[in-house]
Image 1 (cartoon, rainbow, N blue to C red):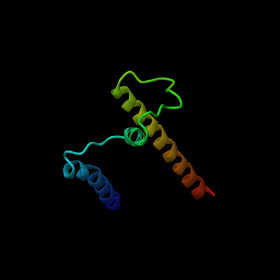
Image 2: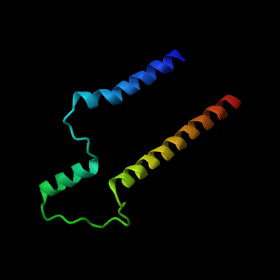
Image 3: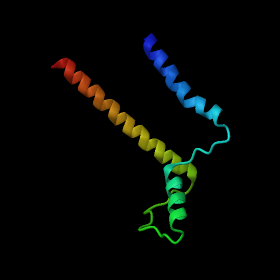
Image 4: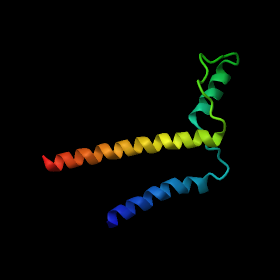
Length: 90
């Protein structure tokens, strides 16, 4: 139990410390970086296709991204739990 608390504290510190070290940094996504790099290489570039649906706001986009991450984490957790239980039983 003590080991898990130490590991949790380290993870929390690893997530929080960069926010205080780089106070003026922009935490953008890879999409924005890729778009800037492509535009720098070729200003006349046009995308191959458009999105099927554009979320109405940035908050909805963030919500859907967080939901996707939660579902993925739940699936991975279930899989590891299932495999552990299966390994212990057999």
